[in-house]
Amino acid sequence: MINELLADARERMGKSVESTNHEFASVRTGRASPALLDRVVVDYYGAPTPLRQLAGISAPEARLLSIQPYDKSAIKSIEKAINESDLGLNPSNDGNLIRLVIPELTEERRRELVKVARHIAEEGRVAIRNIRRDVMHDLRELKEAGEAGSDDEHRAEVELQKLTDEKVGELEGLLKSKEEEILEV
Image (cartoon, rainbow, N blue to C red; front, side):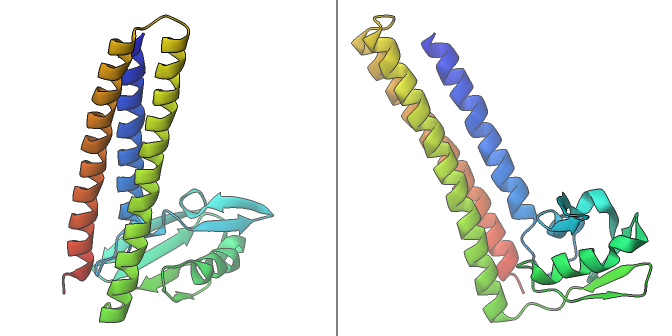
């Protein structure tokens, strides 16, 4: 039973790291990437809808993203959602296509983006710590129910802490590489 709890914790913590890494992809660097728009949610006929579901997104040039809405009537909503996002980009549309020119990042904007990346990393760390807390609670319940001994519980807690430290370390590595990518001129 203890091994199952630890395996479950390893899997859930791995998913948290993966999810945080995916969030990092949506933080802007100097290059155009369709992943920048992953966090943009559009109010589409009253329903919050991810931009990816409403339009095709491509990067035809290093500093340009083009957004081709599947429904032309959604262009204004998509433009509004991009303007309201924390991306700092100004969309321009020609009635059929929205273009986002990715400007060169200023030093001040780079620092802001590093703060955004650090915030995303902190959310990932909190998620990992929450998983640890849940599993610790389950381990204590096992001990109290008499299904595991005190020594077994202690060994599992030590193993869980090692796993937590390992996953937080992975997040730190991802954050470090993302910061370097953002600060690269």
